[in-house]
Length: 253
Length: 268
Image (cartoon, rainbow over all chains, first blue to last red; front, top):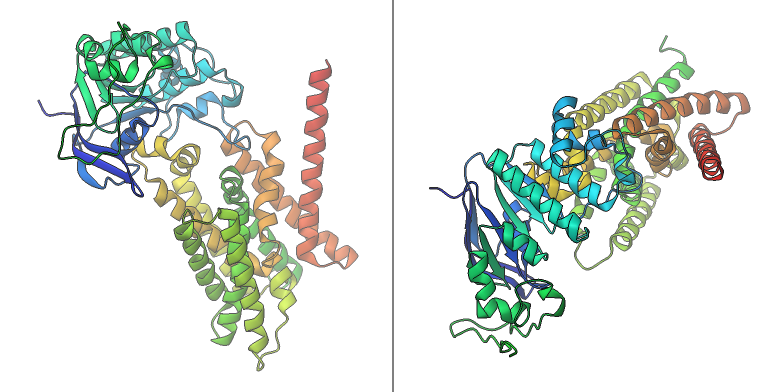
């Protein structure tokens, strides 16, 4: 099967700093893939490269022909001078008829908000409206960048359940970047642990057991809350051509 | 009908206001006010060049405004803060323009006319240029409206929808240069930004959607152009500044009314 989206040996530099190094990645139709990684690990940069927002220093991003992307950003700040109703926002950039827009709001769990100003929404409502808008383009691939970052635990769990439902109904692939490890991992087919390069990847169970992952996200955890006390001694600006100089802490007994 | 200078002036003012208002909304939403200012100030250099080369003033102003806007776009993000860069470019261009005009000994030029506009001397030819330019800008903004709006909300959101945000930025830059070139005759380079910003800012509290804001801004711009012209005739005041005064009064009215309404709501 041809992948929906693929990167081959993708590297990105910001000035002298290397942010991404030789990232080989693919996502297939109907797959839910999650990227985890500590702050500054290049997750957002990777997504931006996938969207075409930056030019890689080397390597390539290949899209399936005619690929339709739905994108839910981490945060969207509306300038206070820009008036915007939820209904109008859903119709950007292509107008949708009112019935479809109402339907999308319902599917995202925020029915009846159409007439509200975007600026008056709560954080959770706002993220769900963003999701509704992304769904309206009937995407082959839904990309979510920390989309539930501002939500509390039940809110985030509910949000991810929606995502799974959406995948079940529409069959679209989903690529997520997230910190909510345990929630996200249970919903994912495949998890990629990123820290400038791909440290490890596989099913959630495999990644959760991987020493590299444990070194990044904490000792002796099942993933829950790991990030909040993780030890991160991952040597990063190393030259390649030799073994990774991972200075992993041994899992505490 | 076009024989009457007041009619021509009225049509010139209305045409400029119509083109400037919707574009001004984007200038406000994207916080480009100073960018507009810099482009407008640079146009005086274009005026000097066209007078020296005996080209139409409109063409010279358009070209220099375009070059200026493109230059700023290219230079931004290269070590200087945007406002510093704009400050340097805007005032340098204005100064060079004014010095340049002083070298033109052969022609007697009223610099004031280009700094503050001279709407009462608008000819039929000027009118054709103004309305042609206005139609072009309105067409451009209407055509790219949704894409421009999406790119204004978030470049990433635009990219995911297959829109190139840099191209939309270019469209805005082009439209801005045309408005500047067109508006020189009407309000002059120093007051062009007012025509862009004030109608949009006035329309903001009266609008729930971006489309409505653009339409209200256009209506307010046209109203101010007409009222300013009548008042300047009645009181023998300079027309360009009088138009801007009318805009300012409308802005004040809208702000006070909104403030009062919000206080009323909070108090109840």
